[in-house]
Length: 556
Image (tube, rainbow, N blue to C red; front, side, top):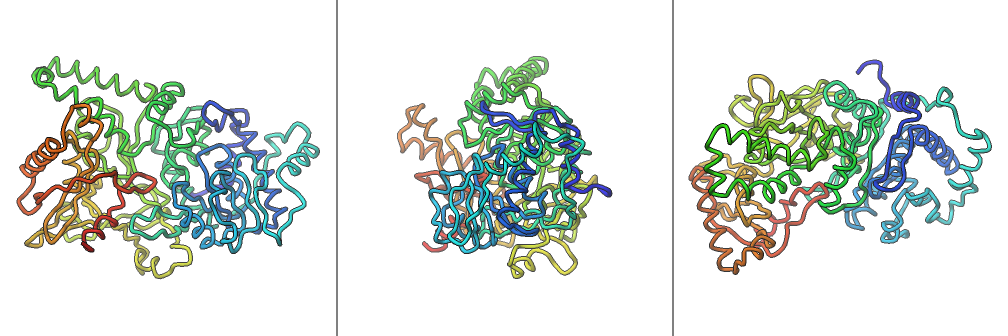
């Protein structure tokens, strides 16, 4: 990574790919690398008009879009710090983050702006519409002589038909500069501002250049939230630094629209969370495989291979049929689903990371990684398992290196809890590392449940087993008075389609409990099942807010 500077990397990618398509908003407009570069310079002029200094904070909230990415790039290339905020956060969280981050400017979708209370803000000078950078609101002490439209007119007067690529220059910004304050999804009930220097972003991009399959002019579809570190790094920053054409689906869309977009764009690399591929497996593949006639045919070797090839072709077609690899991250992939994907030869890989590492910790290409692992540690990180036997006894995963954050913004107490005096980041994840260096995650240390004789119980492993059964839509295993309880939100669509009454559904789920218990040691068996009347509350990356349900149980 030596010799690379993130801002100069962005300068070079704009110059090298000047006339190529950079960003598209699905079925709307497309911008070339040249147009992105020009808009970055225009926003720099806007920041100057707003008297923004190097190191000032600029908040950004809205659906994935070209304008979202241009705002992000303009901010960090100016020397300011971007504060991306997940659009799914509640209004109170959004307002608290804007204040806590000391943001001077806010770029927001107008619909989100209308929901916030402008009297709440302490440091903001102006709020801009993310759609066209027009002013939505200025605070009484800040009246600007110029807006984006005026600056754009001045730019045209100065540059005529535009700047030449050889004359395109971005400021010199040291990679030690604070690039991003990324507020976590708050799965533990409190959202913290992760401070990522530009060097962390550059380290993630550099690793992807050397290890992940994309090249200039490839196409990619962005479906993950860009305000989350996973989507931002690998559906935006790295592709842009590579010369890739990224299309943004924008707001949350139906599976039908997503599949339609995959088939139109035919992306060369696909990123997704496990939830999507697990639903495809459960809804479209498992019903076919479960038929008695199919079970017989699958036992015949030659026919078995033909069936698997047809399923592979069907699954590949869903994602456009042109991808080199599907990278799964953000949560653990169900073991049964992974075994099936491996059996049919599907090109998938499972990565592991966290916002505090910007985000990547480990990865391996689809044809190299071990079953059940999430790859090996990336180049610029060291890893340590806090265990007397790191191959066989799970311990907390510790990492140290260029990817790691500098700390939580204005929160030394929380920073000291996770980064020790030797610089090791305590991930909170439990795992082992095998002889060849592949990491196998067992669960979260905060989720670990002690059995009756001190045995370690990993609820995620039990949940993974439950998830493959019919009529189970969502599941959560928690401890209640030293007994394991499975909270289940049933698959109402399937039960209604099958004409089940509630009594029958309860009976089938109880039978599911018995079947799962047969696969578990006695100390880890489910004591009872409790049916939930509504879906679990989740974070924007679709992780269940476990702490809420554990707290409810403790208080009952």
